[in-house]
Image (tube, rainbow, N blue to C red; front, side):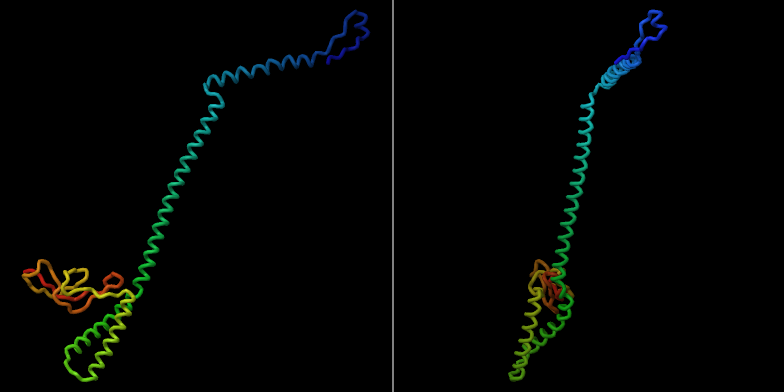
Length: 216
C-alpha cells in the first residue's frame, strides 16, 4: 500500500503534487524476471538429457533390484553347499559311530582266538582216542560244553569262522602256505586248513592258513 507524502510549504507554493513512494513496487518489478528465468533453464536441461527424472529413477531401482537378486542367488548357493557339507558330515559321523560299535570288541576277539584254537586241538585229540574210560568221556563232555559256550559268546558278538576246505581260494580270506598240484581242478581250491580264519561283522581279523590245490 502506497503512502502519500504530505506537501511541504515550497511544494504548495510551486503548485507541485506530492510524489508516491515506489520502493516496494520497484522490488516486485525487479524480482519478476529472476523468478521467471528459472523455468526455461530447467526445461532445457531435461530436454538436453533426453530422459525424464521418473525414467532415471526407474532405471536406478531396476539396477538395485538386479543386484539384490544376484546377491540372494549367491547366498542361496552358499546355503546349499553348507547344507550338503553338513549332511556329508552327519553321514560320516554315523558311519564312524556304527563302525566303533561293531569293531570295538576286535581286540578282545583276537585275544580269544588262541583259546578257541586250543579247544579245537583238544577236541581233535579226544576224537582220535578210542579209550572207553569214564573219566575221558566226562572230560570230553565238559570240554565240548565249554567250547559251545565260548563259541556262542563270540558268535553273539559278531565273530564268525571263515569257510575254507573245498572253497575257491580267496587271498582276502585265506593265507596259502603250501601248493598241491591237481589235474582235476580248474581253479585254485583250498585243500587243507591248518588254522581257522575269522571275520568280525564281515571284516576279516585273521585269514585262514591253508594249502591250495592248483592245476599244474
